Image 1 (cartoon, helix red, strand yellow):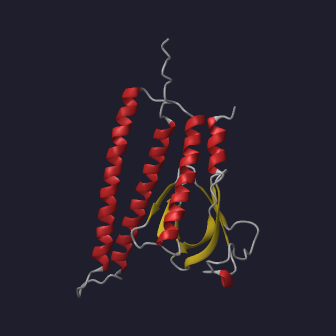
Image 2: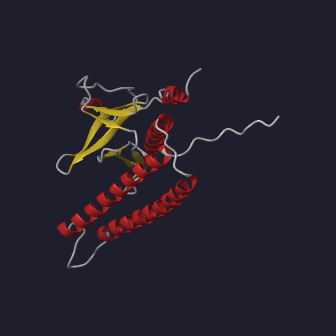
Image 3: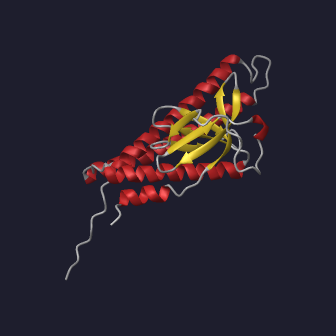
Length: 224
């Protein structure tokens, strides 16, 4: 009989996700087009350099990839995938390694497809890890951990709202003393955004640890 772990891996491998996305590289180079593919079985997201003549061609199933080896690879296990509030196309992946990958789809619909697909891969691997590495906590500690996670999510939600309010306030400044492009204000905005993303990653790690320690459901005894 097929084990639960093998079944989860097999089902996640059916997810087919690939296409063009813009990847934010750094302040100097900005956004760069890359071709992305997801290997649901290994839980990895790979991206490749592609021919600039095929960039933005939504009809072609795959552009001309310039190298067989990926330019980079992201491990999705334990990652947190979330849409950005800066526009309707941008989203980010906060990896368990500490890295954050910022991506941009062609439109809002494509972003939702990518976010949903990547989250499904993350969830499938978290379930697989839960099955293979379970070490349940005592019920009282498990309940306390669950309450703490709820409080952490609420705190993160408030932090996201404050970060968005700060960004809007900086962008709408209109006075003689300051401008939205003031270096100190830009630094403040960048630090606030980076801190919020770091908290996203920390919450993802806590969620991963909590699910690993979730006790398996007990079988109900059959009374004859």
